[in-house]
Image (cartoon, rainbow, N blue to C red; front, side, top):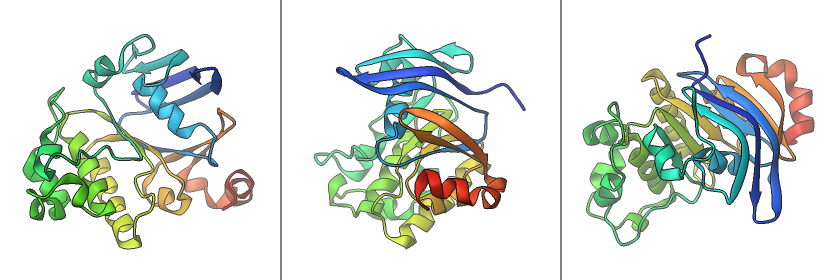
Length: 234
């Protein structure tokens, strides 16, 4: 295996006085798609926000390509090649679809051009002049993902990209993620829908109570069904 692109060791995080993460450890290699699984409140979203530096306090080590991120502000972290797509999507109502798409700066070479994004998400091309929040939930998710693909980020952090979406849109998001993997993107995915995660990921880290408690390769899911049921209730 190549050296990890992202290496997280002993990561702790707080919101104010609330201690949420208690020593998270995992790693992701270039070109992998990895999920964080766990029940609500396990610390999955906080892990993504901690990697991006958008929690009130964090300790431990987060290294991107060998570069330590703890202590850096979130804007500096983004410019090193990390992009975060939050669960709430962050679409601006005052901007059109096109303006939302073009809003983030390109921080590194290698991002997708606008035409390539429209090829992935044809719905966006048809709605360019529409207000960002007039889109359906699925179209807003496409816009949120498309927006970070422009930036040139080498590691994408996606928080619950299928939450609340119709099955046909979930299938389209899955096809897009598999295409991104073929194109060499590295993805860390937080996902409640375990059955969806199993169709796109290489490995799964399971979180409980602010810690990673297990790692299961995608090819060993069937052998670990009883354990996963205990972890997740699936």
